[in-house]
Length: 195
Image 1 (cartoon, rainbow, N blue to C red):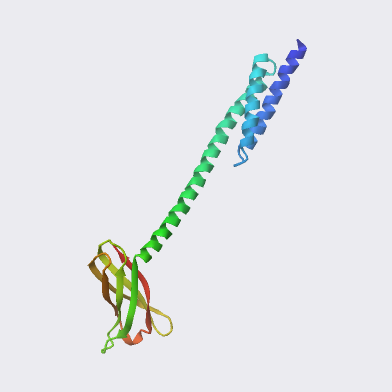
Image 2 (cartoon, rainbow, N blue to C red; image 1 turned 90 degrees about the vertical axis):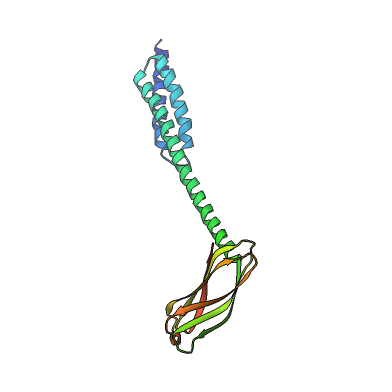
């Protein structure tokens, strides 16, 4: 009889020790699967210890720690996986955005035929054409250039826009820079936007 009591107490102690190990390991992300093994053993040994009625308090403590470990480890795993999913979703959104921008650029072809200031030195123009490479009709289309002086300082933008550019149609633009034309050294293409 004494031997059975000793066996029950040994299992209760084992349950408590395994419960403590389980709860400690449950806080380690990606490695906390080990805590599940400890928790299962702690629960099994705890139940056996409770049934044998020797070291019942230790067995209950081990059992409780095993159950708490399951809750903590599962919560941490869910939280960690949702962070990973968010990261993957964000990176996929970024790559989709890049793809959309690249596609947008491929929708149009543009040429710059000439850049010049008017005879009064009041305004500066960039002339050329934009080809709509799609079958889509654009209600509005805008081309924009950034203009610089001879030292490379940004002087502002030259812009032109049009309405109702049909699919596969070419638009002859004349982008206007409102400023002193004699200060402009050159204008560089910035972007085409449309909807």
